[in-house]
Image 1 (cartoon, helix red, strand yellow):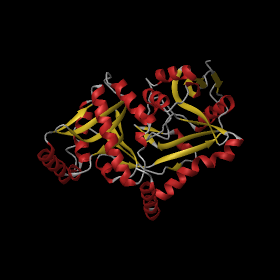
Image 2: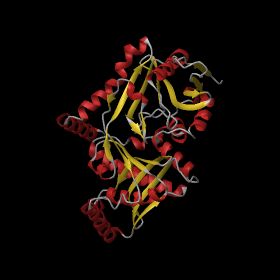
Image 3: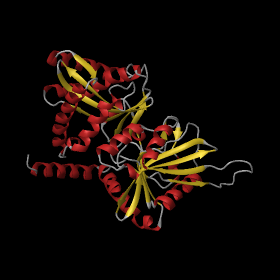
Length: 389
């Protein structure tokens, strides 16, 4: 059944000027509308229709739980927010599908469109009154995205546990690297060629190549996570399905939703990168590199050196390397703060909202305090060592 809820907003508009309208669509109608709306809105890769559909299918989110909040002015689209509803702690939570898996939430809006707090208050009130939403939650919100300010910064946001690494790329990005850094990368490439054979960067173009790169990624990531003392969550069936389905569905597309790139030494895969695309932006969702003798040659630095050249040739103008504080990311991107927002929309929501933000707040406290972070890492490694192999 198609569900449509709507409201006309009175915001003091002059006589004869049509006030903005707000609609909420549900289920399949919402999914179709989001695919249409996305043609004209600005958003990060983690709100793209392909990514959201892939996440919902892989993680078993029912289509009936999908909602689309649409804001228009006299029939002209201003913004649209894709959401999924779930029941948590006895209340109804709304968030962007896959928000806890992605690297950056955003309120998609038309270029040049301004969403003030009064308009957003009305939109969220409609969600509460017609959909029973008690809490709406956003994670890893940038304050700015591709020249636009986030309207959600008008609310009481909290710093996210990690920083976000994002920046522009262009024809001179590689040349602008410090001379010593560039020299180290190229010297490492020569040494690797002596060790492993010709060095090439390849994009998965067939299902067999997707399978081979995915297998290498899982093997390399398992080793890395074991060293960190954590389980390889990407080996879980849902993540396997997400990567495989989106990569294979993207093979015929000029602009893939998700793509595998791999650094080869001869016939061996030395490093991989899984990227998510939207418009002219590329997000490196996760990467991996081999252990052993090849690992001492800065495999990720070399993969990025070759990948940036390819992305620029494909028309990509900006990249991010996700959230998580690792020094190698600052070679290619800038360390940027991002924010979490837990916004109660009902009395019940106000009572329970702290529970939705508590885990993220604790995570930030630990990760931004070096002694606590070292203790947490040691505890994780101890627990991992106790698990049966």
